[in-house]
Every structure is written in structure tokens, then in C-alpha cells.
Image (cartoon, rainbow, N blue to C red; front, top):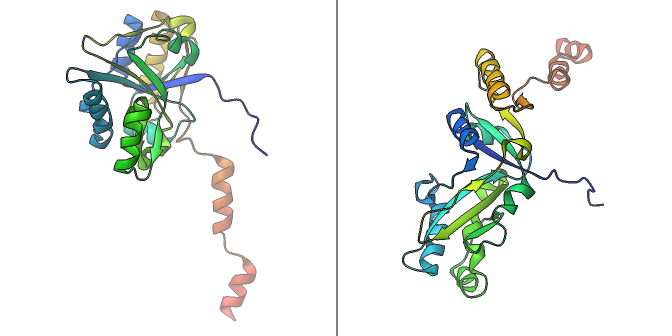
Length: 225
């Protein structure tokens, strides 16, 4: 039976603490240049899309997590940073109906053939910028893309109520975490500021392995006889 659990209507954006303050001060999300992404395979998809749209077309993008956090998200995207939880509907409403924006979940593929890409080129070109290698499937990425010939538009929001919470990296030292929490609450009035628990020791989990590691008296007698 399929799960009936409702997925939270949240998009999480991972970033540095420095950039967090810039985002909060401006109440804007700035879309970045895909050409600067570390995964050049991913950049190639957006580059190809732009070329197909026209010689002067360029793209900018911003990425979110559309699912549960993992250690990967922290280590790769914000090792000593944070994640900002936005109301999905509010963010998408800012760009709804704008023909220079595309948005949606990323599709992960083990392989993709030239024939498949050619088919997309003629029948569904808008899917091309959302194709990514299967090795990144754990990201559960949701992507917003702007494309055009001018300057990329920024996505505006309100700190309250559009930001639902801010989660700090588990690698941030406690003394620094407390200062960040106090600053966010005092200056920006962000009520929910928490620390990620993905690296937290689970006593029940650990105890099961500790008990497993204890020698069984019966086995010890068997070995000695």
C-alpha cells in the first residue's frame, strides 16, 4: 500500500552563514551561474539548453532540497553553514506565469542516449535543464531556472512568514551556534533556529551494537573446550 504521509510544503536552500545574512538583509534569492558548478556534467545540460534557445541566451539557477536532510547535504553544500526552509508556494508564486522561469524536480538518470536527448529537443526541451546523473540522486533536488538575454531576476520573499525555520550545520561549534541563534532572533526575528541532529549519537542505536559486541558465555565455553 502506498504511503499516505503528506510531504511538507517546504523547499530547503543550503548556503554559508555569510550568505544567509545577505539573503536575510536583502530578502532576495540570487540565482547563480551554472557554468561555475563543480559538476561539469550538470553544467553541460543547461549550457546545451541555452544554445538550443538562442546564441545570446544564458541561464541562472538556484537549487533546493525537496526531501529529508542527509549528511551529504551538509558536507557537500554547507559544511559549516545552514539550510533555510522556505514556503514552497510563496517562492513559486513570485515567478508563476513568468516565461523566463522554469522550475521543478530534477530527474536522475544512469545513462542518457543521444536519441533520447534529440527527442526532448523536439518535443520537450524544457526537461533538458533538469536532467542530472544518478550519482546525485540523494540530493532530491528541486531547481529554479531563469533564462534570457538580460540580467537574471531575483526572487523576492518576506522573512516572515515565508521563512519557516533555519537549521544550522551540525559541525558548528556550540558557542558559535548560540551567537548565531541570538543574532537571528534579535535582528531578523527568526523564531525557529535549530541545530541539525544528523550527527547526534543515538543511545538506542549504539546500545544495540554494544550488546551485539559482548561475548556470549555459551560461545566462550565452546571455544575453551
